[in-house]
Image (cartoon, rainbow, N blue to C red):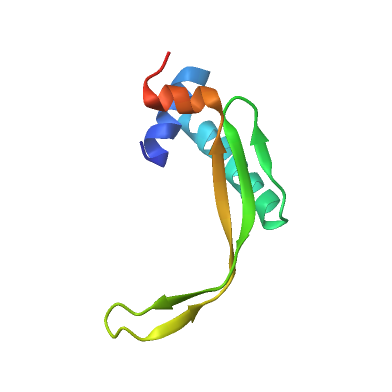
Length: 93
C-alpha cells in the first residue's frame, strides 16, 4: 500500500474528503518527524513504538575494491510493533 492508497482508505472509512485526509496524514507525519528529530519516542498504543537510536561507527569494506573503510556513527529510526500488529501481520487471530 502506498501513500495515495492509504489516503483513499482513510478517507473512505472516516467519511472525509481525500484533501482533508491528505492534510491530516501529512500533519501526522510532520509531527512524528519533529518528535523523533528531538530524540523523543512516539508510542501509538495498540500499534507500536517509533524510536531513535544511535548506531556506532564500524568498519566496512568496499565490495568493488575490497578496501577497508570506516562507516560513521549515525542515528537510525526503529519501529517496534505491538503484539496485536505482529499477530495481524502473521495472520493470527
